[in-house]
Length: 380
Image (cartoon, rainbow, N blue to C red; front, side, top):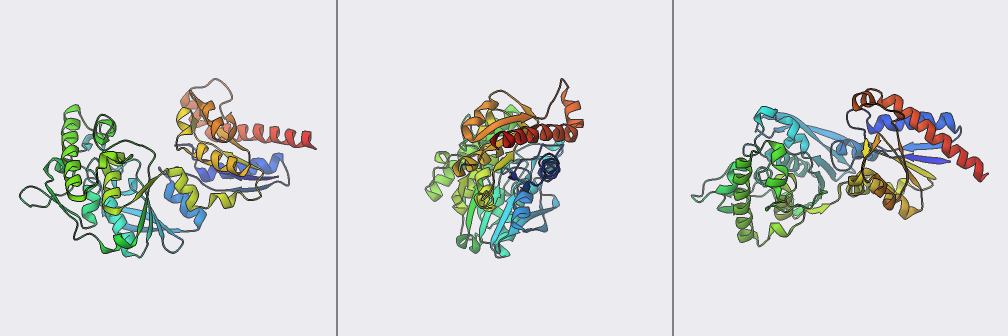
């Protein structure tokens, strides 16, 4: 019996690597002689770089960039395969980098994310994947593009700095100074939302509040985004509101598509492709996946659905060992996951469940492998 363990982390309690360790120990205890392998998995959010470089035997490149408030900060990105780099924008422009009392999307920028991209290009990497979840920004990606040499000008020809507050001032765009290596590279953006740049479901009104935007600030950002979109259309001929996902990460999705000709793709699908997950499935009898809480959203771009669909295509059963189940969790059955096993084994509040996460996970893993052993005995 050969198992492959490919679970997302349980946020705040169990890392993907710890889950592999616990499953391996329990499987060998309950089913002596079984073969096991494990790969850390992420869906394009936190932990994506670590997951990819672990499986591909890559490494991190550490450098100093500018954070969301243009403060100097240490950041990093992953490099692997000789010509590939993987970047998490949250490592340079993430919401946790801004203290709650300073959160205001008018005053944040993606400049540091652009610095990561530029460094990767200057180091010779030409296949670049960018995870854009967890941003603190709503600048339309101007900051990132400015770091790459694009100039955003006001009506007097003065260059804008690339904060959210500058969106309304954009009157012209000069791309002549863009980093030459951009033309030689291909960019994949990990994005699991379809929000347009503007409108009720756009960057400002959908994501701005969680970044510190008040109703007044959101109205100002929306007006700025509409101006920005109009100038982009005039200068490039691209209508960013017709690009699904353009509003992701406060409009960074739009800038990456327009100025870098990036392709937007599901986060989990990108991760699985980068680590050649289909190849890892060869000879596997059962895959164990999971996440901290599984519900109806898990069927849309989350780890269990991505793993389940790859397994189904190969005719390999997959099961999900999860922290808890929410409304619509059973929808995951339509995506290749055959069963869900929650770790909670009795009445308890969330605090107790988090404190006992390791113990509860091992207990659930033992129950799962005992059931698998019964199935093996029935088959024999």
